[in-house]
Structures are given as C-alpha cells and as structure tokens.
Amino acid sequence: THKTPVTVIGLGPMGATMAQTFLKAGHPVTVWNRTASKAEPLVAQGATLAATPADALAANELVVISQIDYQAMYDSIGSATDALKGKVLVNLSSDTPEKLRAANDWAAGHGADLITGGIMTPPPGIGEPGAYTFYSGSEAALEKHRETLKVLTDVTYVGEDHGLAMLYYTAQLFIFWSSLASYMHAVALVGSAGVAPEAFRPYGAATIGDLASDGPMGFVKILTEEIEKGEYPGELNSLLMQAVSADHVVEASKAAGLDTGFPTALRDLFWRAVDRGHGADGLGSLYEAIKNPPK
Ligand code: NDP
Image (cartoon, rainbow, N blue to C red):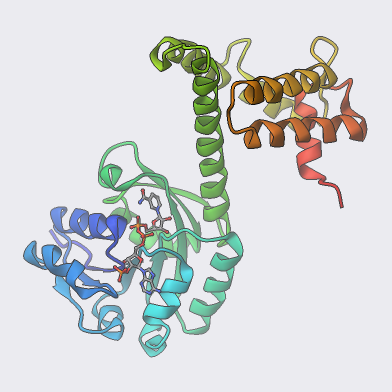
C-alpha cells in the first residue's frame, strides 16, 4: 500500500526518532538537519538526505519539523521560501503561543499551511500507544495528513488558533513540573528528619492520585466546577486558614535547610488572594488571584 512520503527537518532526539518511526512504518522519508552528520544512521535505514533546505521542502508536501524552537525553522528554511508554496508544515517544536501565531502568518504569506503541535511524549514514547500530540491550525490540512501523523502519536486537535497547541502543551508542562517539584520538595522535607524517600512515596502517590479522582479529595474536578461557577465556598476550610498553613510550609522548609523559593512563591500567592478579599473563600479563589495579578 502507498504510504505518504514525508520530510523531517531537525534531527535532535525527537526529530531523529520521528524520522525512524516513519521509516519503520514504511513511509518514504527525506531528512535535513543543520548538522548533516546526524542523518547518517537514518540514511542507513533508508532515509534520503536532502542537500539543502530547499531540496528538503521540494521533496514532499508534508514537512514535519522538530527543532529547539521556531527561530531554528527560520534559520533553516527562511532562505528557501520559494519552495514553501503548497506545503503542509507540521512544526512540533516548542515555543511560545505568540511565536506559533507569527509563524502561521509567515507560512501563509508564502503559500504554505502551518499546523502547530505540542508533542506530549519524550522520544521513547514516539510510535508507542498512549502518546499524543496537541495540534492546532487548519483542521482540513490536519485531516489530510492525520493518518501519517498518527504513526508518531495520537492526534488531538484543539482548534484553529495556532497558539492553542502550545498553550495546551505549556499548561500540561506546568502541571507536570510543579507537581513533581512539589513531590521532590515533600520528599526532601520528610527526608530532613531521616525518612527514606521510599517510606514517604505511598503517601505522596496517594495524594497525587486522589487529586485526579472522583472521590472526596478529587480537587481537580471540584475546583473546575467552582471555577466554572465563579463560587469558592470556604466555610469548612478557608483560604486564610490555608495561607497561615502555607507560612508553616515555608518555615518548616527553612528549618530543614531546604530551598524555600517554591513554597515562598506559593505562600505569597495565597496571601495576595487573601489581600484581595478571599480570606473567607475556599482554595479555589486562588484562581481569581492568578487571573488578576497586581498591576
Ligand atoms: P533540541 O531541542 O535540542 O533540538 C535539537 C534540534 O534543533 C537539532 O536538529 C538542532 O540542529 C536543531 N537546531 C537548534 N538550533 C538550530 C538553528 N539555529 N538552526 C537550525 N537547527 C537548529 O532537541 P529535542 O529533539 O529534544 O527537542 C526538539 C523539540 O521537541 C524541542 O522544541 C523540545 O522542546 C520538544 N520536545 C522535546 C521532548 C524531549 O523529551 N526531548 C519532549 C517533548 C517536546 P543541530 O543538530 O544542527 O544542532
């Protein structure tokens, strides 16, 4: 059966794995990378190395890009814009939503469709079940190449606005980093009194799991409902009470000799919300403080 040929630009850990995954799935693959030597293992597996960025674009309609940021795309193909007409560029690099929107203006100005993506897996997950990518931009262009892109990860379309893929990606990354940084801080905190990481793990894991559950500690769902209503009941556990406890986290961390930057930032956010009049509201009112920072 005919498999759509694809060009992959950028052969870092991600792009190289993407190119290899396409090859394994039987897609003809053309590659280009600033450092050409990184293409060697892929050429050995059947990929074609394009001599220039213009050749890489000319080879195929579908062009998947994975580089350190969007500037790398301009540095790579910015001098080959004549070859962009009619192409579908799928950029899976990370950058800010604004950079993604600007890239769409640039691509459209040269007659190309840009699909932006935020890929939610490290290299080992590419081509494996469960991995997915947030895509935004033209749904028609995405549909045309959905089957090919599904070789890399599941396809999750989030909307026309080209910045959306990166907003979702960034939002997820923030949950990932802050949750795990909290976990590491917690392990260090109990560790300061000699508790082994493995002794604490079941408790930390239960909290993380409970937050996403439908149970009484299922605060992801509870807070989402509160945010949608704009009501943050705090009769049973007020934000003021929790702000005072957040002070205790800072003090305990200091006493334990730990870095206090993260708990201090959290504590300060709590108190800003209290200062805005949310002391008698619940934890969900932090959302209002986050959305309305001091001018
Ligand atoms: P890097 O982010 O280190 O990107 C490496 C690639 O970018 C190489 O192909 C490199 O070329 C190219 N590059 C960098 N600067 C330029 C430039 N000025 N001009 C041309 N090419 C340039 O590697 P990854 O593969 O890890 O990541 C790629 C993207 O995927 C990033 O945006 C990252 O945030 C995202 N991502 C990464 C994940 C991961 O686990 N690694 C997970 C999810 C997303 P050269 O080889 O010549 O240096």
